[in-house]
Length: 250
Ligand code: ADP
Image: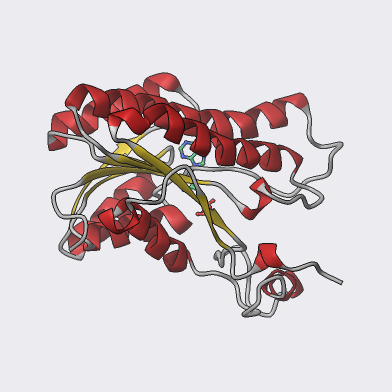
């Protein structure tokens, strides 16, 4: 049990990486506040944790709204007595042409994927400083914070910002004993991508193993990053990309 007595918030906890990570963190002894703007899925994640014998509550929050994040953090401390960290994981972003990157769409992606991560870092660190807690912040970046592909203009801008915010925040918060790190996932297996689909094979081929990455494989690394085993990792984004970033495609 590497995270006994830790109280951790997970945003975007209703599906994919957020759900798998919530379950894994809870299995290591952490109390999880499962948060998502989809209240039903946030509640389901908390239920799954409780059914597995773990501790969890849920709280609806839209990560792009300062008042929601302030409330999420206040509710967490009111309910569980402290705050030891946050996984800033909620995200949006579909593949669309540059012409379809209207100002409204661009602003939406930035408000969730970039501003939302800033809000999580800002309010969680403020609260941990008030409480005198030397906590950990983990952010979800992406391989597309490092390299570009057509169709993800806004997402890539936001994720590159997450990589840099992780460095900047680590520097700003080091004197308070707060560590800030990130993961950069490759292509994740989600129910939207069906077996036998050509697109699934194409994405899988981008990895050295020729397989998509399971959310649980990201969860394992995030759990390690929250643990004291990772105490010497700070400001870095850890690629969990099955080799995606290391080689040039033909
Ligand atoms: P991944 O495969 O990377 O985990 P998903 O799309 O499955 O991606 O998960 C992203 C999660 O983030 C979803 O549960 C979604 O409801 C949540 N989410 C999206 N936008 C927001 C937002 N503005 N505030 C909070 N949660 C959000």
